Length: 221
Length: 178
Image 1 (cartoon, chains in turn brown, purple):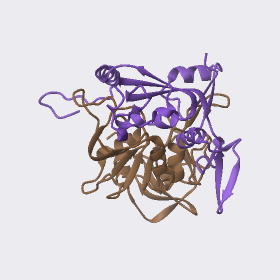
Image 2 (cartoon, rainbow over the protein chains, first blue to last red; image 1 turned 180 degrees about the horizontal axis):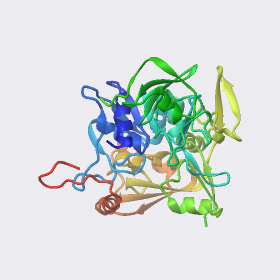
Image 3 (cartoon, rainbow over the protein chains, first blue to last red; image 1 turned 30 degrees about the horizontal axis):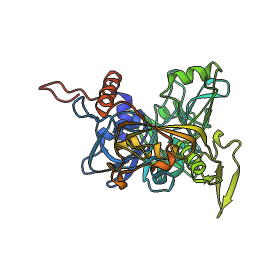
Image 4 (cartoon, rainbow over the protein chains, first blue to last red; image 1 turned 90 degrees about the horizontal axis):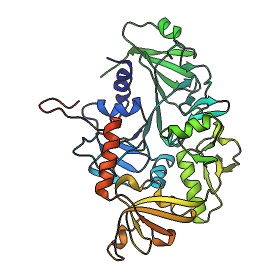
């Protein structure tokens, strides 16, 4: 199983029946493919859609039905459509149960950076989109990312180096190697990939963390 | 010649990022929810909106902080434009515009905040053909209605675009969906 699929499968276990959830782009989008049996969630897209189905085919797409990234989606029984102000009223107003976001970096204070890669001094790309509103308003913020970058450096930092999307707002961090919850005392390791030790996780993690008493094996179902 | 782009996200416009990187244009980012409220404030005659979004980030720089009932907010000032280009489904001679599907997006807000608003529609209809409660943007906000692609043409254009981008699910006959 690919690392990104592991992360999406593990993240899907955070979904609770009946929740209203916004999935960010990239890895979080694929969480929808792994929703556990018996759990129904209502997905929101911040351009203005609540409850939608999967990707359409060449025969079933509608050019006016797309998500916030401009990709085609399908409407299902119970879908609702509205404009952006209503979409962000749901998000900022505390009506959304959760948001799942891809991250460039997270840190031990629950900060997340996911909108700004430097393209030149003081110039960043691609921009926050709805991510800053989502982390400010959603009740639960799930950050999903690979544990290390291509050079093998930890993306779970003591302090984020990239511009923040939100300060102190992450609730749970899911990588392909480990799961951490963010507590007032800092990061707490709750799950580790099969065969890994706490020492292994420390070796690939820059952030300080403590280990949960009931730390367990990384769950995929 | 564009000097500056004010937006929430430029990732789907590689040309803009390229010019920004080269220093040819400036980009001013706002969180999407704050951006839309800035435009709404301008269109609605409000002096701004208070939002907690962006606190503790570099996008709070230059924005006034205001405390209301012990909570800190950023003052998002009104943002208006000389021109707004909006996209609707049907339009009539009075400037009424009807939207279709999720393409409604930020169009109703954008229509309110410009000195001159131009609506591109799939179909121009006679006054009265649109049911009153189908009117998404009342004509008071619209200065010109332009016939764009028909819905059929738009369906073709987006279908080609999405197909080439790999955004549509492909189904092989006799096999599971991939």
